[in-house]
Length: 261
Ligand SMILES: Nc1ncnc2c1ncn2[C@@H]1O[C@H](COP(=O)(O)OP(=O)(O)O)[C@@H](O)[C@H]1O
Ligand SMILES: [Mg+2]
Image (cartoon, rainbow, N blue to C red; front, side, top):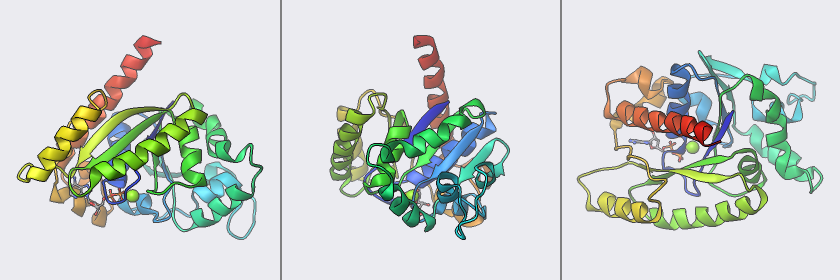
């Protein structure tokens, strides 16, 4: 099972768009995928047009909001063939409090440990991270072994990337398996000089990890309002083609990793 965190210190850079479309694209190729929404905004379910009853809070604590014990499997919501989600949302505030109350030496690895039994039935675990740095972000970076970092090719992106890099380095001290494997330029507008400038800078720093950019595509911003992924909403759009490329690269790296081991 590959464990991939879509993470970046800044918001609005395309994390959720990437996590949802990557997860659905992988599921469409027959991979079994669990997408975990780790943001209190709870956008993943909305992007997929789903209304799950339970989510990550119940998965970890095994209790519903009223305190009734529930099974772990009932918290996984099937959204599409081969695609399940663990929903985020406001319940994550309580989850963070709950994590904070757990013993110091175990609290950072609770999420990863709880997800281990899913290994037998899943090919991919994808985490859609929140922008900040807290007990839940640390849990994700302890549970994952690959990081995909979207970088918006507009605004002060390099600052966000530097902050994120510091987070990542401190997480790597605790989880030595964690690798930054993909840096994904997003919101690429080839008409603006800024897009090209940031792209060049990112290429210099991350020659190995850099992926082909995701262009700014209005279809990508429309699809969530219909609860559809880009492959459902407009499969012939540039956004769909850009994400297909990313999916091929992620799958290709997986077979490469297998050959290397
Ligand atoms: N390549 C893109 N082209 C156009 N709009 C995009 C693109 N990627 C994301 N968006 C839009 O930008 C906004 C922020 O994206 P989102 O994925 O929610 O970012 P994050 O999860 O990092 O906060 C959303 O409204 C989304 O629909
Ligand atoms: Mg998001």
